[in-house]
Length: 112
Length: 429
Image (tube, rainbow over all chains, first blue to last red; front, side, top):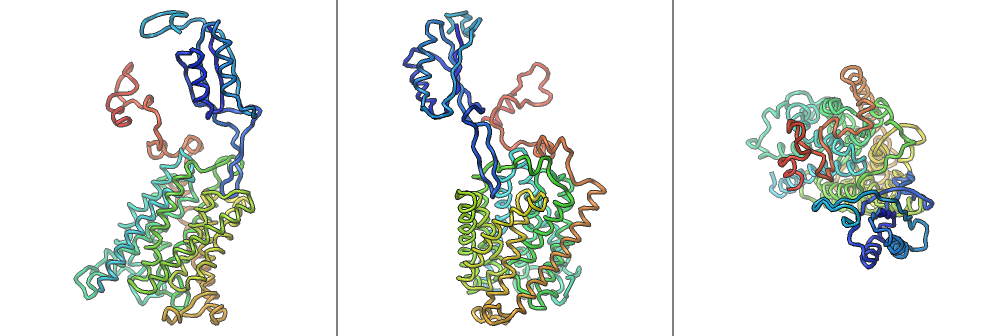
């Protein structure tokens, strides 16, 4: 099993969600996060004073998938989140040792 | 008592009362989220204590003895003998209520400068004592006292309120010192919508402030109303345009700041000038105040929310421009004419003198008051409180509780759920 994590542009969340559903994913977790990458931040001006906003709002999407599904999941996120502009975000995959469905006590792939 | 006059002044008094919550939102939105409740409470504190102080003692000093030049005395303390049974039918009592609203908002104006680091206990003492020692005497001098007798004009409180509070704000931040990390660390507004709604409330209330200051439902009130309308708009326009040229954008904060600067500037002039000069005063105030708010960075005083740049400078602009545009013939009044109406420089000189007098008294007494407070109870919160925010430390409250997982009740016991039913009902229900 793998954990697929993606940090994407917030306005792309709906597209990513739909693409993941279409790829057969049954559950995702999203959180609002902030950070910076190559895109950098932006400036805001209040009463003539400039403020550098270094951490931009992004959405983090997390999906647990069976190993065989991982390429399809990654591709779904990659295609649906892409705008070809700087700041589209990243996807990474990490191994998962164990998954438990709390309600039933199922373990491993059955719990995904 | 004319019923029409009484009706208008009654309504105006309520409008002016609404300005203090409006100011609280205007300032509170500009403040950071961890200090917004402290800012609101500094303003609401004035609404709690100043009305009582006003009727007990401050009104007597400000307006008690009509013949006095410097000090109104104590004869009207506790509003002795003032009520609705006399010949005036209560108009005097109504005027005192109306003016009491001004006494509330004047110290509240200072709160924006001292934001983020003043001990609330020090503010709680400072505000009422300042009304007695600074606001009341200057009010006397300007309205019927020596400055008024010499011929200076101040329709609704440019000198008596805005210049007065503005210089006190400057002195206060000099004694209080800079906030930690100012100016290198940014202090951007936490809620611009709050600033905008505060601005709207202020503008609305200001019609009572200025047009109500005619103390009658008459032509002067109508002209003051129109002037309040157009000067604020012109000033907002000027500030927004200067920012657009200088920084590249039309900003909400620029529009709001300009509106307030225009309202401040037209306050002393509202019942003395006609409509077109009001637009000129507004344009001047908007442009000048937009530049004046940058002074603090050059001079190194941490006027957090620009009380000096907007109220002190805006008040001076309006007050001095009376010396250019005052038109007594139009209003059927017998005061001096402005320079452009053929009156020469006399009125301009009196306007300058009145403001210098207010600056000297307000600056000096404010300094003494704050130095005494500093040496006794202290005026500044600890570094730790400043860093973590004044809302929780000074008021045990948080402005924005977004989640409901972290607030349990003390005494619920170890192992109890962190969110008890009671707390949950409050937060969710």
